[in-house]
Image (cartoon, rainbow, N blue to C red; front, side, top):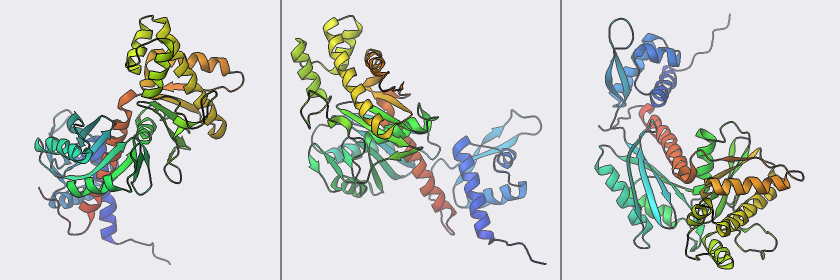
Length: 378
């Protein structure tokens, strides 16, 4: 009679430990009974694992459950000093930094404009401001930036390729790993995990900020492309624009305003607000931008055929949403296109960075905690 296979006890403890850590990260502090229900582990297994995690400095008492009937039961949660991850959104003008814990909760936040060309110094300054109000180390950072981001973390933007210099400098100064992502890709991940794209098999996020970028999700997976170029739709050919001309950005908005006799120094948002107040000339500018966005969507649709397009960034403004809908209706007979509105608007890149930072932090912390003889400093 053959004997059933059995794994080593260390492996079993690791699997059980990860199950409990994930449950605490996902749902917050719980009693032993709640952890048994959540993980399917026995009371003995939960007790043993919690003892191991407490010895590693990974969990701590987190109050008492007085809501259920019977004797009050103690709750346990992730140790508040396990540390944090930094989520950063960088645009052409400013940096927005938040620190998140392993549960994904935002614990501190800072936002400031760039005063010089030293983006690294400014980001580090903001992270240090956040960290000064908290106790615990910063283990890693996820940074969303405009421009093409290569698989190695290099950036190609208006200043040219940097060969990974930004990521290396930031990682060295912070003393922790840094992951750089295209900001629109992070926005697409936010929509995929917690927003309008959560129930879609595939979609393209069209994010309008200083320019137009796209985040492509195919079969539930973000598509970055071989060299990180996927989603650079701002330069797709459109008649009568010359090849290589941007479809829409701040300069294009100024050119359109000049041709219509509007204020060339006004921002797109100001033109959108003027259109909302009934300014018919501003409405013509908005209609043209809406037309260009729909033509981009049509081009992408003919190649990738996503289930829907999600309008993000400044494109969530009601006037631009209406302009896109009107143009899309004109082309519906030839090419039906479905448009949705972002759940997070201009904040989507930061929301995506927060989600990715929290996920990466859990992986790093839980691996360290469950490594034999590992200790977390309190």
